[in-house]
Structure formats: C-alpha cells, structure tokens
Length: 89
Image 1 (cartoon, rainbow, N blue to C red):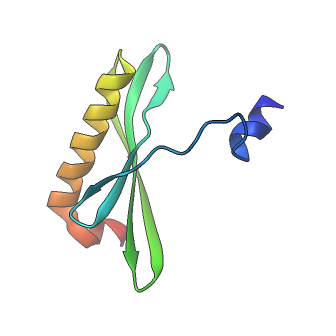
Image 2: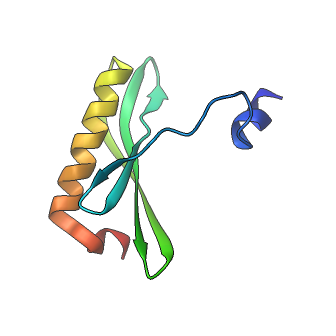
C-alpha cells in the first residue's frame, strides 16, 4: 500500500515548492542510491500554456540529502544558463 500512496499522493506529504530561476521552475529531486544521493532535478517552463519538463540526472553523489538538494539546484541553474529553452528540444 505504501507504494500506491507515494504514486497517488497519499501519506500526507505535500509536493515540494520549486525554486524559480529565469522563468524556469526547478524541483530538486536527489535520488537515494546505495547510501548516498545522486544529483537530480526536474526543470519545468511554460510555453504557450503548455508545461514542458526535463528530468536532469547527473553522476555526482553526496552523502547528505541537504547537500544533494543544493547541488541539484546549482547544477540545474548551470544547465539553464548554458542551454536555456533548448533544454526542452
């Protein structure tokens, strides 16, 4: 039942607030893996009323979840600066 709760929003946890950066929304979502956390973030932006989304996953890992969240935000900002809207093509 736990898996179903996670998939359908149960368990009382609310969705994290995104960080807004240059009209992009960044949702840091580090992936727990073998006792560490892999850098990952979902980046979204609206285009003509349609939400475009890109899942960014990197090889870097961190032992602390807070550090992984900050690193995920920093890496997403770097990718946005480098690619801009081309991130969604």
